[in-house]
Image 1 (cartoon, rainbow, N blue to C red):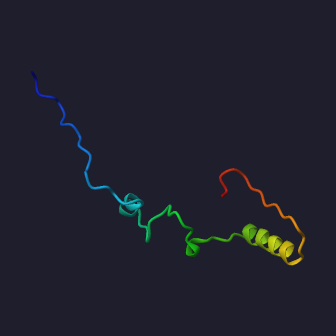
Image 2 (cartoon, rainbow, N blue to C red; image 1 turned 45 degrees about the horizontal axis):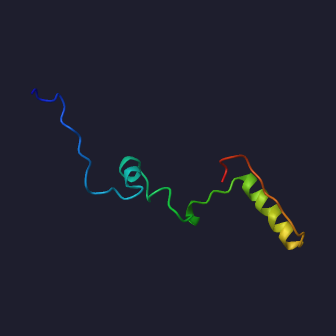
Image 3 (cartoon, helix red, strand yellow; image 1 turned 30 degrees about the vertical axis):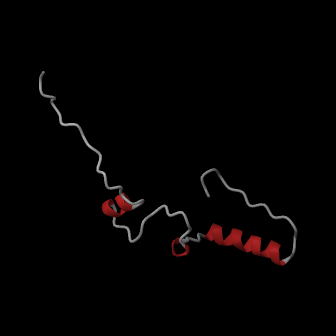
Length: 75
């Protein structure tokens, strides 16, 4: 029988914690894609602020039902 050309790759038995790959590769301060939201990472564009103001106006005015929609993937 002949020797195989390549050694089989064996998976590392130690699991990498979620997000660790990104921390090792990119200059991030904390792990991305956490289960819970990170309030410090919240970004408000001018449009976000306008929409939040509209929602607050509807709530303060007790307008009943407010629907906020967005494109797929916008969260």
